[in-house]
Length: 321
Image 1: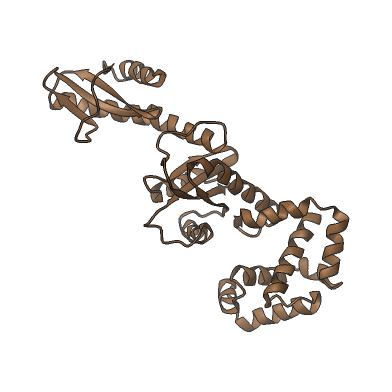
Image 2: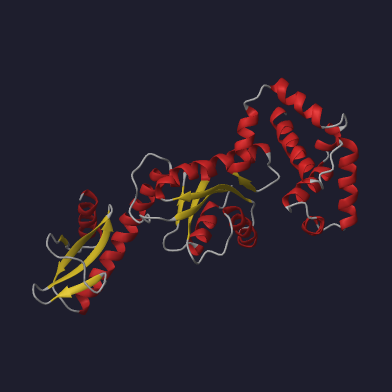
């Protein structure tokens, strides 16, 4: 009840409104946030506080009292409840707090993301809040990271969290004139997994920015591989790279033009037409660069197995740098 008492104190101090807490009145049966009772001559308004609805009242009825109650409720929501609710969600996702009010209790899946924007975090937050549904969560975390948890229901048209991240990146590129990095945690199955998958998303974001700064979407599933590889000894990792790649591999891995071609090709699922279109180059130019990579490394990354080997070798090389 502590927060409810703070609301009453501030409404009296800042707004000059005398408000009480009703111990007996329930929320309006028709779902109204503000209602009046001719039986006791009071105007009531309800606010969700700490996981339950608290009913407040002011003395008197009439349109003027209803307007005052509506303003008091809006002040309480803006000054206390929304702020407190965001803190609760932040602590919950960080694993240090209880389930906050508003989290969907029951069987529900969430796409979980961690996003970072160097100087325009508020713009990023405002955009995510604008597209968020009623059961979604958008909250600023520590270190300039914004958490976005999107519930996956029957209206969701995306096949995976990764596909949603791709669409989100394209939309953000139009809305925010700054690179936004997106860590993809995956799909949390129920509210109990939200902290775990936010941790995955944040880990992907941090590792991705370190090992692959030229990209802007990082999947935890891929960076779990980085974590596993990083636990190998440098001697073992270096031996692996030299085994799977021909002796000229360093010339490829340090060539921005060739690596950009490889990254685009892998990102577009080994589709030459899509990759060349994303790079704004002719497909023959891309083919030439892929041929050059094969000649210098011994791997034809148009072949799935060679592409996966090349990707793993690139990750290890970045760890060793």
